[in-house]
Image (cartoon, rainbow over all chains, first blue to last red; front, side):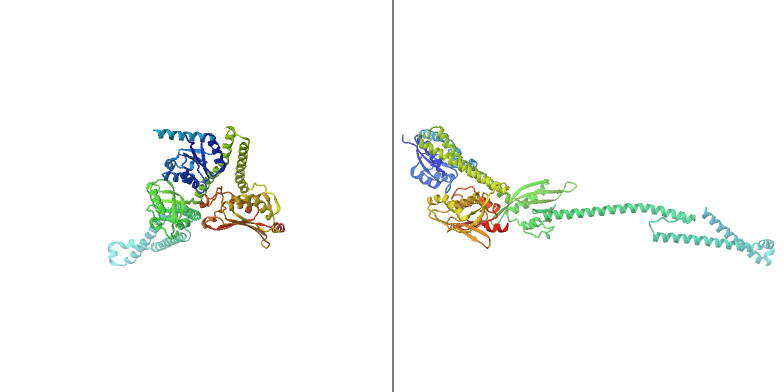
Length: 130
Length: 494
């Protein structure tokens, strides 16, 4: 089985770097972007299996990125994990509309992030088989 | 007994006069034939001798009687005079029984009337005091209502205006002094959504007879909205009927804005604090989990942790510095320094970031006599804040020009930093130095806490008696700068 591809989006280069090392060490292929606009472009081109994005970013926020992903046929089903330092900034209805699989609040644990990614991708595989 | 005695005198005098009369008649009658025949002659002769005595006694009686009546008339006249001239005093008895009785009766009536009058006077006095007190209370209430900056409206049981202050007149656009007894709906333009809501709120409060109602009402006019905290209290009669309402409208627009700014700040600062913290936690966990295989990676991880800890510290320092300057607790060490040299030092720190974005930095020519007496660390902080903002908000390929001028007449050194960046909209420029304020359109352009410019303003103006300034053209760029008193000018002053 080919490596699962994860798109990591964060304006903090250090966060991208540490997440990338953790995921690569565990057999994932990692692509990254520093803002939403760049990430959307990359998602359309690379079709990642999952997107891990920060909530607050310049140019295009995490929420705007997810909205765009959901509107695009090729990317509408990609599961998304959102990293946020302000979970309260997103309303519950918005969370449902955007179909965000999981919210992880900053500061987060890379181990926990890896576990979430594995759970979501595994669940997706099981659901796909059914 | 005296009136009875007078009566005896009158009767005796009357009798004597009658006897005198009879005697005179008998003296004359005795000379006629008929009288002799009747045998009256002897009788007449006997009585005729006492006639002069009777006359004298009768005359004395009449004189006495006249004297008594004169005395009585004089006493009555005196009482009348006393009554006319001095109503409050007692009528003096003069010894005559009738007069004494009359005086006593008048005096009794007098004293009865006097106490009644005194009672009435007391009541009138109390009423006048009450009226004065009420007038004073009304004047106080008027003064209170007119001096309140909040809009106050008082209406009656038919929702007509009884009273309003200047603030209410301004808010609802009516003549507050000459609009009494006009219907509140007629006075307040109800085509405006918020104002219609207010009129309804006022009328409903009166109808519901609830003692106190409170609500937030938003008035929107000419694209600007203002939020008011509206309190309506019913005024009750003794029978618990509502005779009107008092409405007070307090403008809470600014409070709302500040509250929103605080919420935004807490949210923003928590994000800003959590970002370096997230890196520290992730990298330290990776080290603990043995995910860094080689020494080089481990060193890289340590270095990230260190730099993020420093970043966290800087942010906390910024917040604390503003708070210290505001509370006047910061330690300031002022020494004469050259602004050009200070700027040059800070430029070295920012040059790398500018080069990464391909931004040209146009430096300054060295200026002599630009010595200012400042806290070096603080002014360096101001310069770095202004320079890093210029780099953040200037797109790639732009330029930043730094100028230092010395105005000897004004006794100031002026530093200006001009960029070719995104600029600031006209309606936002007045807020740019406010704490936590960030230009809404530029939020996505770069990260920030909204503290840098406020810190610069506090350092320049509060700590160094200088002045900050800004000019900007949207889409073309901005000039931020500051003026500081020259060290020489300050020395002259002191």
